[in-house]
Picture 1 (cartoon, rainbow, N blue to C red):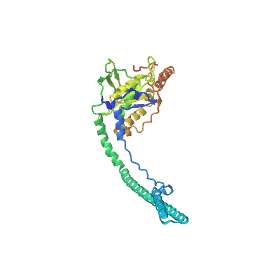
Picture 2 (cartoon, rainbow, N blue to C red):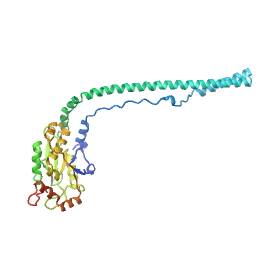
Picture 3 (cartoon, helix red, strand yellow):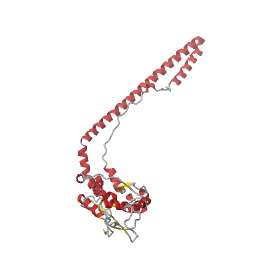
Picture 4 (cartoon, helix red, strand yellow):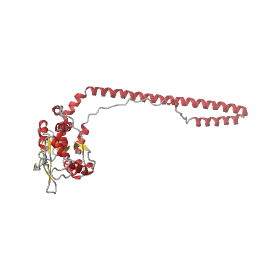
Length: 342
């Protein structure tokens, strides 16, 4: 497996609390992010605060004032001016300094305000040009979408080529009581759905078997479809529990091999197989954008979520005979026995 596709068990620690559950391998997650169509938005620039109420210190005033006082003192000594003449000269000089300071501050403010207004006008022009381009893009958005979607399948095909490990053969695992009827519903819309095959476990004599598998012939998109029941039919042992690592390890195994995983609760499959089919189609269309599939399930009902269960909750459901109830109501339960999968 490529290192970029490696999945750590920690990434699966936060189990999804409701069914249906969808797990994406990183390879397909990155594909979806890259294919998202986004329309740029440009915020209109705002005029900056006027600088006329900002205090500006003119650094030229101090040296000019010091030089002027030196010259005035030098002239007073040379000419022998009286104290009154010196006082008048000092007052006159301070008046000149104060007037010069006001002029320099006004000039600096005016210059900075001019620069600020110019920068704002340039940003405003850029914003107007950008929005004109965006408006033209939006007018042709449908055309751009069609162009992008045409290459979407090609990109997906190239991305998955040789990176999805397929089964080594058909599975001999016993089929669950709800799987056969559900498969018929799925195949009415997705003929490629089949009972899943076997995947040998490295360094172990056992193998994993999928409930059902969907493989898109054109792109290679492969989906592991699982049906989870809260407890086994014969021994009533808790099954597919949130606080059990079995499914987490199993998910990790298939995600590493770039299989997308969709898990339904058995109750959903029994009560609303069409809703499950619709959900699966929506997952597929999210990648392939084959809108013709959506037309086939448009009349199918939406799928209501079912809360996932813990080990203790599964035991309580077994006491209440929860499976037997919904299977009996759906006509799947026969003779008070469940031929559940092991």
